[in-house]
Structures are given as C-alpha cells and as structure tokens.
Image (tube, rainbow, N blue to C red; front, side, top):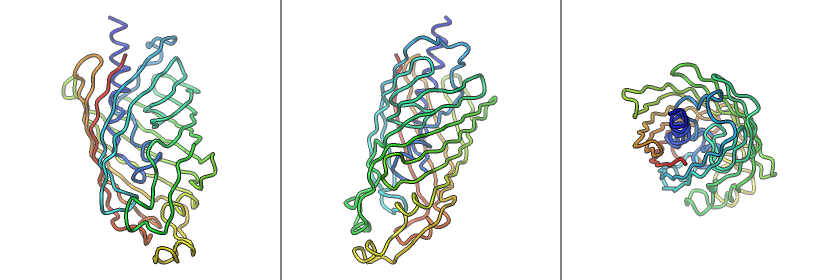
Length: 286
C-alpha cells in the first residue's frame, strides 16, 4: 500500500507537469518550457518517497502556440515527456526544473520547499526566419544551453515557483527570471484543476535577440531599428486540468493567455501583443 501511494504521488507530479505546457514566457523556446512544466500539484513528500529508487516517465503532448513571440499566426509542436530520477538527481523531463531536456539535482527538499540546480537545453527551435514572412532578414535564434536555479514553495493548495536561467553557450540569449503562482483544486480525487498568474523578467540581451532590430537587420528586413532594454516583458494567466486514468496514466489540457508588455510589446517585430497557447498531454510512470 505504501509503495502504491508513493507511485501515485510521483505520477501526480510528473504526469500533470505538461498541463501547463501552455504557460509561455515567450512563445516557443526553453523559457516557454521552463514556465510550462510547472507542476500543478504538490510534489511527492521527500520524507515518504523511496530515496534510493529509480522513477521513469514516458509520455508526450501537442501544443498550439504562436509562430514566434508576438506573432498573429500559430503553429503546432509535438513534445516528448521522457524523464528519469534517482534520489536527488534527475535527467530528461523535470517539472520542477521546467525543462524537457535537463540534467540536475536538488540542493534541498522538505515538505514545503524544493531548491535545485540544472543544466537545460532547448528542445524546440527558438525562432527561424522561415517561420514567418515577418522574420525575413532578422536571422535565426539558435538553440542554447542554460544554467538554471529554481525554487518552489508549496503550502496547502497554493504553490509558487521562481527560476533564473542564463545562457551558458554564448548564443546571445541572456538571462531570464520567471515567477508563477498556481492554486489547485480537486473536486474528485482523480481530477486536478489549476489556475494562476505568472510573469517573466528578461535581460536586455535576451530582449535584443527576440525583439530587437539592429541596423543590419533593419536594412535586410525593412523594419525600423529597435533596441529594447531589460524589464518585465510578459504577463500571463493559465488554467489547466489533469485527470488520472489509472495509477500510472494521466491525461490533461491547458490554456494560457499571455500579454507582451514594455519594450517587448513595442517591438516592430510584434504583430499581436495578446498570445494564446493550448496544450494536450498524456503520460505514463513506471
């Protein structure tokens, strides 16, 4: 009975992770995934879970998201949910790290706090000129590796997550900090409903890469030059639902409304400040 309870709690954590796959800080990069994989419920109690056992998750999802940050058009992306953990260490998908590709460890865990470090890598291509005619002449935004520090605090039915990600591969992606608060409600044991706000702060280097236009890009694209500074560039609100089909199976869906603000919203690249994202997922734990 105790082992079954542990697996249920672990399944709840990992399975519902993709329910917020639609909580983008931008639209389609690792920052998006970092916010998206924010767990909808309390993590397994580290004082109860088996400290020296492997846990594996296999699953996937489909996301309808803007073609690029500020786009009026959308695209569909398929994403995997493949992860493994042993004690404080994890690899692959991890909801606390908010990443599909990660390698990291928890520095501290108790019944309320989870603090960890991770190295993550972009799974989705951030942005390509070929994504949309509006991007012609702006160049591609390349994938990169990030160093991340994340902190999560959970009390009763409310959970808050903060993270800081920094480009460590020299791809001009700068530093991004995210903060999300999520409330949870379970009308029945199998169904988990969540809702809550979030925001993203980005460095000037990050904003220049996604929203800035230098003189060379201006000449190629025909868009006016633009040099954004650092600051809060995204506000969002997400709602999600996860249903546990069985001890090992979970399905879920989510909708997120995001608003580009500040210099990001004023960029000539942006066609539409309001950004909607939708997601469906399924996962299996063993």
